[in-house]
Image 1 (tube, helix red, strand yellow):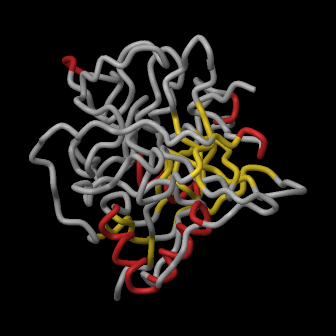
Image 2 (tube, one colour):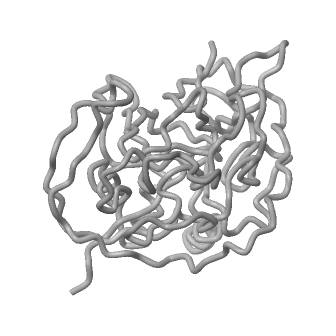
Image 3 (spheres, helix red, strand yellow):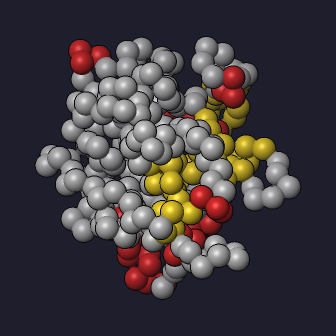
Length: 298
């Protein structure tokens, strides 16, 4: 089975890999560390959601009334998630053995080869501390978005923080920030050759030219915020929402939003606010994270 990097990942249990995963290179040094744990108020109103111009699952173009809320200015980081784990002793789904199997781990993007053309593998030992497998680490990456978290892991963090996950409509409304353009920053993906979000440059999945300086995830806040002051709503990592994509007799399928560092012009043009993808709620990967929302204080 071949797994699409920006599509719904269904990795069969027999696909577990004993390999340790690829090691990440150090992220590009850049002065983009900003304060985390801060919120932006989003004043409610009429939202224009979806698109008629792109992928079928984004249709129809529709309107919805949104109630005011606040939202994390950044994706939840490794440092923030570590504080939660330290305070609670929480164990993520990727750190627990899969039912009936003595393995733990999550899905990891790997460069395809002639011998193995698939670019997703379930790596034993991949988890939020070791996003690409046991040979990888988050040391020195406290400001990168946490990944290898399931929907329930994200919910657990949000509950601990006294918050919740956004609905798809809330997320898209916040990402648009009043913009009515193809991308939240305008109608060009890279105006004046400036990369506006952490995505894949080059031909996916065989060549990443690294024009934005990042092979995997970037620290939060390395790109300009949108009009609401929110960073990385597009690119970097997909983000969980509470919205169910479709009913399922088995594990729930939820909507993820925003695209990731794996979305490329030739393959996954989902670095737009209207883009949406289904994701198995219990499957952690190294390209999905989250942010939380809450009530605006009186």
